[in-house]
Image: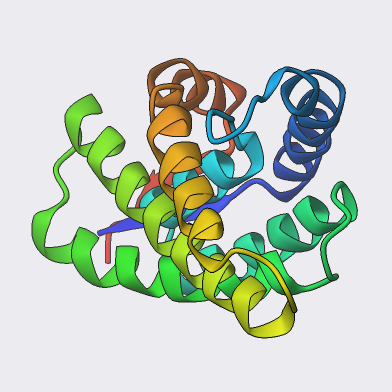
Length: 169
């Protein structure tokens, strides 16, 4: 049997570094629908690699951290990540195999699910905006952020965010 858990202090430190990099560099160089969301890629990593309970709590924290860096409502990203985590946890038991192609596909599914739920919430709570532009942003950010899966997942694995131990029972 394997026991998988998150190393909390490393996770918080890496999340803060990713947040700072996203605020300083990524938002500055995003243009229109072509943008990157490093915090959501980290949330996808935790949803794929750790058990559901730990993934829900870590993605809730990452969502709040993401909202603190934007002008959006506090908690919107956190609540939008929860259905994406649940979807990935249901799919990974049946379809996930360890490999970069599966990491990219599952991250793309996570990002699309998260983006569509976030866009639906933005449409419900905003007035006088173009509704479909939120969905175009979700698709653009999902596609471009999925391109960063190989280097970021390698960084997260080398940082030791997830600890896996084999037990006798």
